[in-house]
Length: 440
Image (tube, rainbow, N blue to C red):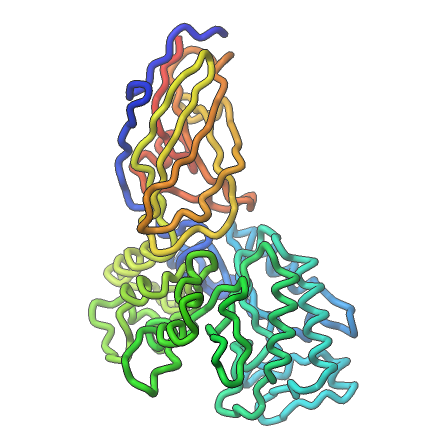
């Protein structure tokens, strides 16, 4: 159908302002993360976490069994969520997860802690071979949101405290980091500790393409000024140098709310002076996600705690607002441009492409236009970024139409990125309505 007239709610070349409204708490790839299968409907979430024993995956030398990972990823993605995984070898009060073939070949395990002999070359070869195979199998898998490096130390947290003498030698740490850097170029990998070049024992990582996870969040996060607290996350970042401090701009920061602070951290008065201010921790770390069990316990949180948690969690990670759209028309070609600002504390790290559409009044998608642009590298505190599109309007039926924008989740049942705009979901779920068009 030939188009006779085109009307928009703003004149060509004049930006139309779009109203701000809070984005949902459950936006993808951010927020609180329960253990796999334990989240239910207790609190909004988009990801689930699980440990995986190395011995369940490595059956013999360079032979792997991926069924445990597949089962987790399928179950979690079936609930519309991305997974965060950590593979471990030692976990206090659990049997050693050292692969059986290594035990049988004589690799030592300290029976009191389950710590393996990290100096054994056979263990080093097993770990680097595994990481290579793991990356070949799962790097870039849309079901996997983030991966914490794991493998070394208690809980895979890269320490054997208080048995410091049993900790992995620097050469093994470097080999594991090298393997991860080569094997995972798409799926973000996070390390437990920021380590600078001057560290006396541990391998530096500030120049490597990894994020970090603070597993004592809101307890061992902020700088107290006390020497005994120098291991806290913010002092550790600063000690590691400017590359570590600025790492959040390109690599994600995650972690876990300290168990002693679960739930209570969101109360107006947490009741424990050791619990640090959650909002300040979020701002200083630029954290995107946090494992938590406090808001996912068997007893639902009361309405006041839930409301405060919602506001606190909404402030984590990214928050995208589109303050305005402008347009122009050349024949049947509609050219549009939006400004996108990030009101959060961190960027969006996944290169999910922007998709534009024309919807009718009932929200039916009449036409779509995919682009090769995304939301990555839009930093908070910086000027709004511009994203543009050209859409051919020829052949569209007469009547009211709505130009809309979305960032679809690659999971079939995954939630899209929702903008902090009042017209988000106005005409169709997952779509941000930008401007109305009348065609005659």
